[in-house]
Length: 68
Image (cartoon, rainbow, N blue to C red; front, side, top):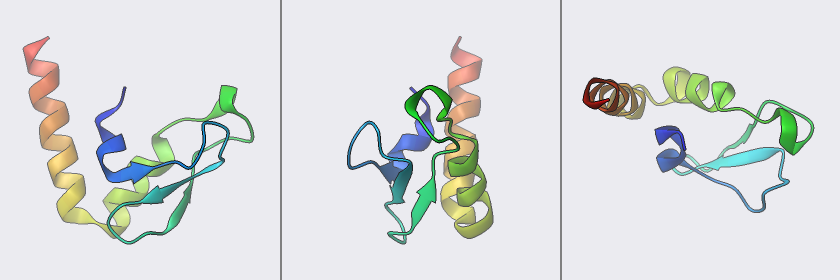
């Protein structure tokens, strides 16, 4: 599972949006159904609206990649 989920919650598996834990905004999950959901929009939202959290996310992603 992507580390970006630290910053988001979803109400149900079929929900087309995720709620940002920082500002409580509803962010599209990038698809119309579960098969097409992705984390790209969530990562972009962090980058554009919450630079500090995006920095934390990218740092954690780099550490995880180096461990593998």
